[in-house]
Length: 260
Length: 311
Image (tube, rainbow over all chains, first blue to last red; front, side):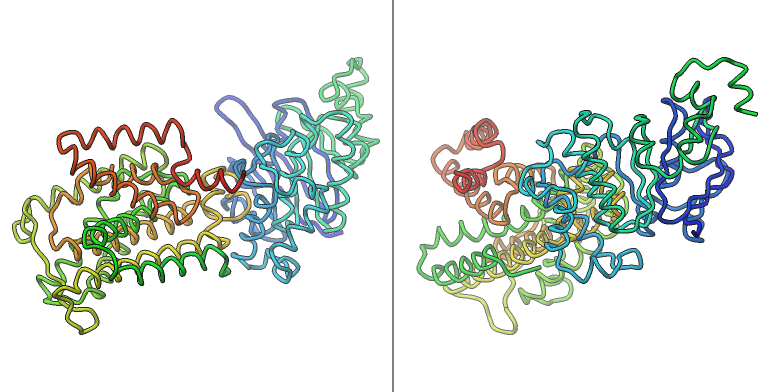
């Protein structure tokens, strides 16, 4: 498969704190990649750099053959990289349907290459209906977004990222704040929608069950570096990942051997 | 954009007001006239408030619109009402287009105070400009409309009819804009600028466009008021005038384009009667009115209709 996102030599520091250190990541199109690591490991910094919220101190990010390192978030979105947020970012005074309609309107108004024909061919209301069905939000269409329970807010946040028809979707802890009963339902719904639209997904997650079940590849972060990169079975068995990410007690010798 | 029930209601209201004009007593026509001019300015304030911004300096554009209309007549000797109103709109579009480049970077109190600062700069310039009448301002007559003389007994009704067409036409266009994809971004920006940017739209560009539209409406309102009153002075840019626009916008609410029109009429009616029957304390009457609205109708007068609809 072709590489859709290529991050080379990303470094980012905040004063004395190193949030990203020589990050090299190439992501293949249509793949689902999990980003794991303890708090402050550099996962969200990586997502923030890819989506333009932060500029790397050094290094470059290439999306679909185009250097996006210096672009603003909205320009990166227009090219086809969208994100959801750890704390859902909604239009709280609007209804669920109106939240999605704003996104449809932006796609229709911009109309460039990022707006695939599917979005502009249908009427805005039809696109909203499709998204509501796809994410199981039809029953709350006319409810005010600010009054929804957290799980539904998370779903709407992801639906809002999907409504602008991304090629890459970055999800920042999609199941945080969601009850144990709901998290698999939420992820099943998201993954079904993603598969239908053939979107490449990178998602940050602390829940290893979720990561193991839904990803084809895992990037493990520790102190701004990627300490393991590979298929879930391999990465989750890595002694350094077990010690620094999962928090298991691993004998030093095993950890060193694993790292070597 | 689509022609919905609100559009039909606006057109219907315009027709009713135009028919009623010649039948109304002179005082009612004058009251409606001033209310319509004020309503046009407050329509622009409503758009800004929907975008999450409050301007304490829209007197700038109100005054610029009036002076553009007046200057066209006094210096260029063009006294056609339509051209004078158009001049008011054009000048405010240019000035707000330039100032909007700076103002669209600011939010909340910084936006409010910076807009106030610009209006006070204009006030200061006009007060010192002897050619424009300094603190006294100057009179305008606005003698024609599309070549036809506007004078005599019919002048009041003609000016009223122009105000009805311009104000309700502005309300119609604003409603269509707010119903469009770009117009819908106003509420989205008020709620969450970060998300708007991450959906691919430019917050600053949208605020800039909304600011210009709002300023043009203020300019049109100012030009209309100047034509109606027949006099212009720098007080139109002074801060209490801008405060009055904010007052009426809060009194009205932002729920519909009808709100500023209704709010302006209520405001002018209360002011007229308070001034008539309580000339020394009319400001107190307005203050108490605002207090009651904030306490019992925090969404403005328009929320009465919204509650009825919800009920």
